[in-house]
Length: 116
Length: 364
Image (tube, rainbow over all chains, first blue to last red):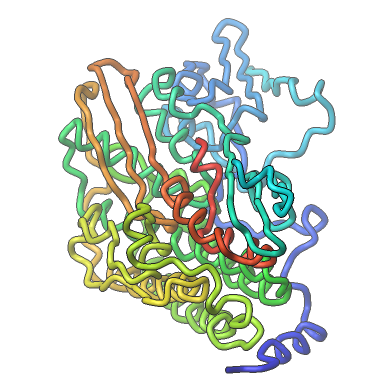
């Protein structure tokens, strides 16, 4: 039976740096393939709409006539299905997480990337 | 309920919001002095109706819903759903995908058990140990993020195989990282098994006899800590038929035995991952398939918390007729009630925590 078995780590903790980061002031630790949020190279997009059809949460809406690509960030589950389906490879997963939204109005706003 | 109305008895509500509970679960404890004489549990606070979504989402998309039944057991939920569909559609999953599934399911077991160790330490008031356990868990989450792209909801499984491959360099690096991680985890686990104050809170508390565990249908570490060697991984799903491992059991049936089973399972999972990396076959990671499922399947898997059963019924369309998951926490509730009767009220947090309750899974 051991006594004071945590005393060593308690003393070490007094002199060590914190094990956590002050996110968002400090960048989070991500890997090269971290699925943070969907990003689009809109100039390469042909607005075929396959990403919207493949999206399991119907977060993406594509309008071929108006050449718009919209995503509802709060609906997106960052599964990367759209990126895998994109025939032009203009969709990718960025490692940074989506920015938080502060009001209901902004949460419902669509992000629109206008095509050329 | 006649005992409730007796003047000698006190009824104390516990939960659904309680500092020791990670998720909402409610009990009414009928006490005689400090002893519990009866327990009335109620669940249903986080029911989301995920099973009925199976008839509204296409079967290829439902894997994302299945993964979100619970955050901690997410990979095995996704894998269970995929394997049920693969059984219905007679899809031959490539060997490499089977082995990758083993690696990820064992990593999820390690991070779940480390999470539980932290929660247990928190429940008996050992804050430093709680933080050390969760710090060790971060190492596992880093491996998972590096290989799948996410920390908790992996999104790595799909019908026919897996969505991501792990290259040879990364696999050998994972093996090295696991060696370092094992010594870090061992330092934390040794405190759980040897420290006098931890033993004081766990030894002899919440006794579940071998007969009761069997009769009440306990599963997972709760069952194995009472001396019954039952582990669904021995059924040989994914690539487990090629893995050499023996079922971890303890005989005491108390909280300490349940803690010990989980700790030994962490080491066992490290060993299984090493074995899988050593004999990882090459080839494809996903089999292509055509058509829609028609038929039904019932599959069983070993979640970190115990046996989980999935039932899937398809009708030849893109939408399933029925999806059902019987989760381990649900199966463990009768055994937990048995254990709580006769216990001291002060031991309730420890006993409730040692079944590793996962209410999101239970209520779906």
